[in-house]
Image (cartoon, rainbow, N blue to C red; front, side, top):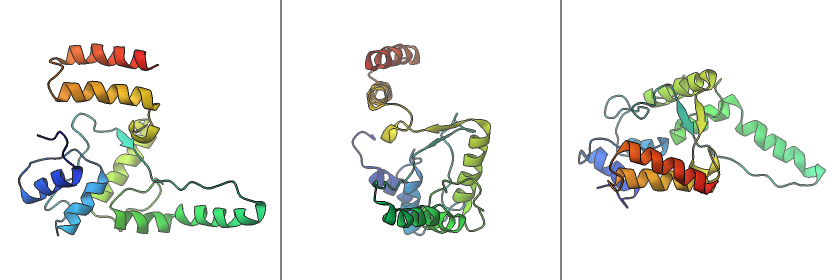
Length: 177
């Protein structure tokens, strides 16, 4: 029963062996590592079944204000530093995520990181890299919320068939437009 359960509690259930699998982003990996679990030994990282070859992304961002010219150099220095290959590697190894750049060497990454980097690069090159519905990357909020509502009803058994779910999804998105 996943409804209303916080992601970290579900992650703890997988770590303890009380649950088999969890669909979650890379942030869950930190919980496994903190519990002294090793990627590719104690847990595995996979794309959601049926989505292999595609990547849905979210990203961390820095917002910068429009500042006077004498302060822009500091903003450029911050952007240059955070987007450098060395920073992207060091930061993402610690965070447990994948660099925004596809040309960062995977040398320092664990098995999950190496897989994530390879998957991201392949999806980018193959045209199968998509922005997530979360945080407005893939669609405006009204459409994203319509999608989430129908999917939630389907997962909870309130919509009985995939055909009915598709019909309701098309209608919900049309209504949201």
